[in-house]
Length: 420
Image 1 (cartoon, rainbow, N blue to C red):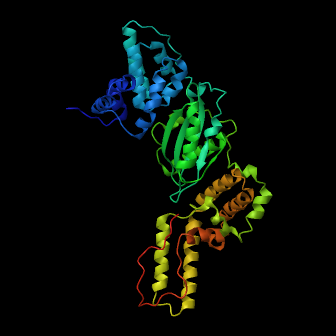
Image 2: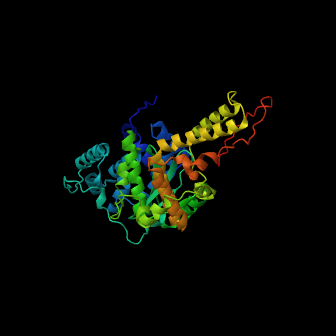
Image 3: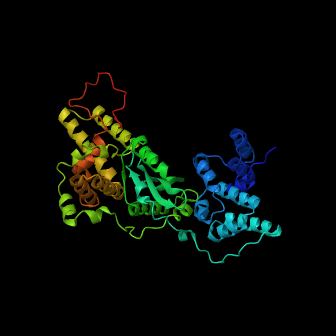
């Protein structure tokens, strides 16, 4: 009976030989995959998305230029490559890999593999004890990594995707797909490489399959957003996805990575200050497709609906004028409380929206939106007094018409929330 273990590193070591067969043999794929799983191999979405590119990568061993890509692989593929190097007697390659690797579990596996090869009579150059680090790789200058740096807009839950790309020595483009929540930070990520020929196909997929707007951004801005998201993880005590920082370190940090939001350098301060005082038509921004998802979470909308129904059914209110005033007061309080308690969160999102619009050459809207961000951060301003923030709630709620239905009319049971 197969004995299964929980530790990811131990499982990867245990299944390494069967994974080598899966990566190198051309036999029945399902049979080889079953053998890997029976040896307690890890099988998840990341395994399947990186399997083919790893097959290409190992065909290029022991080329030293592949080392950085190996370091960025999931631990199970790294263990398989170490096992393959032992089988192929790639002692020099393993020594170079050890010199660059920072994962202690992988380092131990490499030391054990090198000891085994040394006992078999294979020699290799002892590398310097001082780690060079994974920043020392050479970037191919002919590949434009900026062509795959993108961001999506936030959805109703505050989630979005950041695509951060760099060039790889052999395969062409390496992409980091980062899933971020605007409150808690990064909650998932994928790392994959594509050939130059696959670049157009991936770009097409980004633009057509998501169902939410995305824009191309400079590499420096992608890194700024990732750094900002990491700080949210730190603030909330939430761990980053496994191997996230190891993979991020494969990307050389752009020299021009901003320390504040880039939109601040694109729009003059005078224009921002003027815009932050003029809110009269700000609710019209919600007619833009980019603001389709700019709204509180569903649970907040449901709570608002409950409060509205309480006002509509109240027996204390004696006439429709009082009911109308009570409804306005309720809406004002809900909107003020929600955005008042989330000023920094939505101001940051508005900065992102402003940048998004600026990059789409909608500069007048961009100026208006950055002004809203600054107004929201002003504690002396009531968000409910600004039409834009009121509309963020009410655009998804079917508000009742006055007068309301008589008490003996059939009660409506369907929700009044209208989702995009």
